Length: 422
Image 1: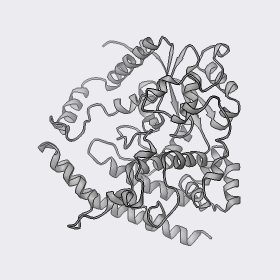
Image 2: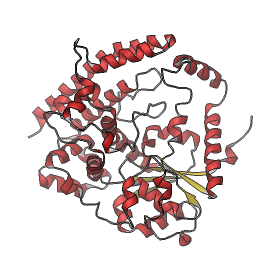
Image 3: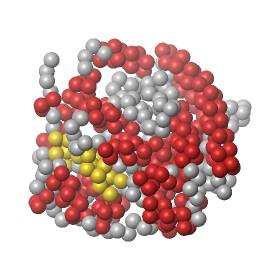
Image 4: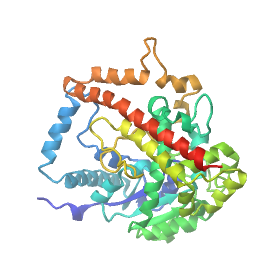
C-alpha cells in the first residue's frame, strides 16, 4: 500500500459560522506571500458524501451507493479521501505558487470529525463572533426572519413549520446558530487550534493577523498591511461575503450595530435558541446583559435544549434519504459523518421569499387537499429510478412519525415556558 501521509500539502481549516467574519479573516491572511485562501471550497463536505448522488441519477442512486460502498469497504476509505484532497489542495497551491492553503468553509462544523480523520494534525483557526451580531447580519444580509409574526414566524407554536413550511435556506441558517455554534464552542479545546475573536480582530487587525500568521509557522513581519483591497479573486467567485468588496479598510462599526438592528423580540429569539449559558461561556456575558437590560429574559437551559431537539428533528427529516446519518437524539450535537448539506452558505437575499404568501408556499395545500411538501416527496419518488422508489416512499411514511414527534417536543416546550417563565 502506498503511504501518502508524508506528502500532504500544508492545509489549514478556517472555521466559523456563516456571517461571523470568516471571509474578512481569510482575505487578510491571504495577503501574506506564503498563504492562499480560496473562497469556500466546500471540498470536505463533498468528499464526505463520496458515493452518494441525487436520487434522479439515471444509473440509480441506491445502486451507486451500494456499489461504491462495497468497493470502498475493501480498502481504507480515509486514505482514498485524503489522496483526493491532497491532490486538489496540492494543485491549487502549485497554481497559486503559495505554501499554505486555507480552506475557509463556514459549514465545516457539519463534518468536524471527518476533518479530524483526514487531517488530524492540520492547524485550525476558529473564529468566534457575538451571536447577536451574527443573527443581525443574517437578518440584514439574507433576510432571515427572527421575530415571531402571525404570518410567518419561528415562534414556539409554529415551529412545526420547520418541517412543512419553512424554506430550507432559512431553517438551515438558523440551524447554524442552534446546532453549529455548540459544536464550534466545543472545538476550542482541540490541539493545533487558534481562537480568534471577531471583535478583537476588527479592533486590532494587524496584531491579530500577525499572531495567526506566526501560529501557522510563517514570518509575520513580511505580511502586507491589513486592508480589504485586492479582492479580484472574490469578485469572480459565487461564495464569500460580498460586502467586503465595498470596503477599503477594516473597521469596528459592525460590532455594536446589532443593538439597533434587532428588536427586543428578536434578541429574545436569539437568546432562547442559543442559551444564556453558551453566551457566557463564549465570553459574551456583557452582550447578554445588554440584551437583558433591553427586556430579554433568560428562560433557562431546558428551553434552549428543547429548541435544539426540535432543530435536530428537522435536520433528521431533511437527512432521511437513506444516505445520511441522523443526529444522535440523546444529545444536542450536530451531525459529523455523512450529512447532507441542505443549502448554500452564500445565497443572496434576492433568492429568499419576498412575502408571506411565497414563504408559505411550500406548506400550502393544493386543490385536492394534499400539502405541497408531501406532494413533492411523492413526485421525487415517481421520478426516482425503480431501485430508489421504495426508499423514497419509506421516507414519506416516516414523515408523519417525525412530525408527530416534533409536535410533542413543541408541546413540552410550551409547558416549560408557561410553567417556569415569568
